[in-house]
Image 1 (cartoon, rainbow, N blue to C red):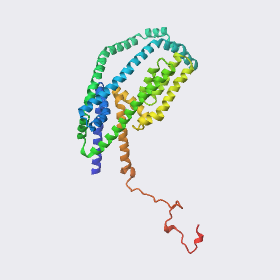
Image 2 (image 1 turned 120 degrees about the vertical axis):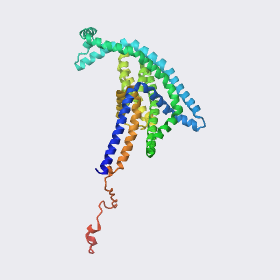
Image 3 (image 1 turned 180 degrees about the vertical axis):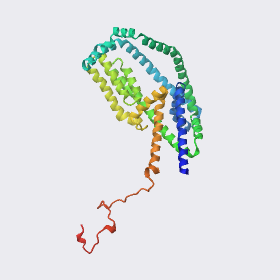
Image 4 (image 1 turned 180 degrees about the horizontal axis):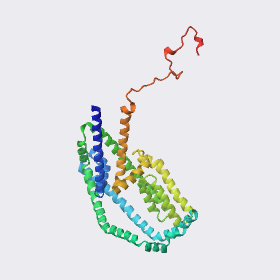
Length: 394
C-alpha cells in the first residue's frame, strides 16, 4: 500500500471522527434542550449587547461600568415593552374570549355552508354536538386513553410551569455574566484552536458574527415597526381584535411570508365576523399591502439588507427543522446555525474553485484577445504567400 493510499485512509478516519463528534454533540443537545434554553437565550443577548459594551470601553468606561449600563438599558427597554404590550394584549385577549360565540356562529352558519356548497363535502355533520357525543360513546376506550394522556400531561404541567419560571429568572442573571465575560469566553475558545488554523477560524467567526448580528438587530427592529403599523392600521379599519392580529403578524415576520399571510387570514376572518361586508375586508388587505410595500422597499433594505445571505425558503426550512429536531431550543439555534453553515459553504466553495479538482492538473490556457478587426487569429504559417499580388487578398 503506497503512501497516497495511506494518506487517504487517514483523511477518511479523521473525517469520520469529526462526524461522530458532531452526532454526539447533536444527541447531547437534544437531551439537554430544556436545560440549555435559558443559556442560549442569555448567550444571544450577551452577544448582541457586547458591541455596545466594547464601544463604551473604548470611550473610557471600565468593563463593569459598561456592562451595568448596557444591562440596565436592555432591562429598561424590556420593561417599557412589557408595560406597553401586556395591558394591550390582555384587553385584546378578553375581547377575543367575549367574541368566541360570535366566531363560532359565523363558522358554523356561514363559513361551513359556503364551503359545503362549493365543494360538496358534508362538514356540518362532524360539527353536530349529538353526533360528536355519539362518536365519543362509540369510541369510549380510545377517548379514555386520550383522557388519561391529557391528565398525565396536566399532572406534569406544574413542573413544566416551575421550570419556565426558573428559566425566566435565570435569563437576566446569565445575560449579565455573558455580557461581563464575553471577551474572556472568546479568548478561551480561541486558545483551543490549532495555531495553524487560527487565522481561518477567526475570519469565519468574524464573518458569521457580523452577518448574523446585523440580521438579528435589523430583523427585530422590522418586527417592532411592522407590528405597530399592522396593529394601528387594523385598529383604524375598525377591527376589535386589530391590535392583537397586528402584533402577532409583526412577530411572525421573523419567518419570511408567514407574518403577512397569517395577518391577512386572521384580519379577513375578523372583518367578516364583525362586519360581514367586503369594505372592511378591502381595508384589511390595504393595510397589509401598504405594510408589505414599506417593508420590501424601505425597512428590509435599510435595516436588514442581505445580511444573512439565505433564501427565504432556506430560512423557513431552518426554523421548522430546528423546531422539529430540538423544540424551542432548535428554533432559537436555527438561524445562527444556518448563518454559520452559509459562511462555511461559501468558504468551501472558495477553496473548491482554487483546488486541483476544479482546475485540473493541466495549467489553464488563457486565449489572447483577438484584434479589433477580426475575431480569428491566423498563424503566419497558415497565411497564403504574397507574390506581389496584394490586391488579390480580401
